[in-house]
Amino acid sequence: MKRATQNDEETVIRILTESFDQNKSVNFIIKQDRKRKKRIKFLMKYSFFIGMNFGEVFLGEDKLSCCIVIDSKKNKNTFKKLIFDIRLVRNAIGFFRIKKILKREKILRRHQPNEPFFHLWYIGVLPQYFGKGKGSVLLKEVLAYYEPFKKNICLETSMVENIKFYHRHGFDQVSKIDQELAYELFIFKHEFAK
Image 1 (tube, rainbow, N blue to C red):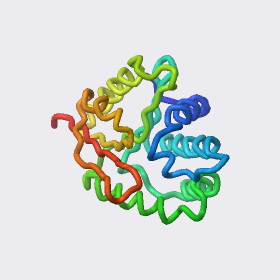
Image 2: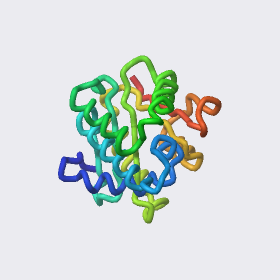
Image 3: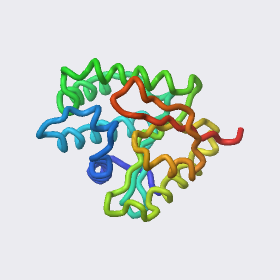
């Protein structure tokens, strides 16, 4: 695995846009219209910006997989982030959906740990390589990289088919949101031995 640089932005955006095209959580966030694919692409551009500024972005060695990990202690509001937030609303979410998205974020925060943690925000593989072990290799490398920090890694998924994948890699399901959103969201945590 390698740490992404600004030069890798288009590669990361392409991987995440393609791999999250049918993701329930992503499609809940973005406005559903004829520009849906462009909106997903902009969401991933925003996500790359957040990852580069408030966490880390990694690519698999073959550049067929990637992930974005956010450090909860670093994720702060800045002027630059505010500008990107406004652009996200304009280009992906839509102004009339802001309340719905803010409610979702509030629900998610209730299920996140109070202590500092790493948020595995996205992990994606180009669809033609699904099921070929690319995601497993990257996730194992990411877990090995973060193990010395001794902070929990948390994530959420709306894809039922990903639950076994996360269990196989040492994540435990700690919560399930099924009443407050229009879809089920499963919350996972990976604890390192202290």
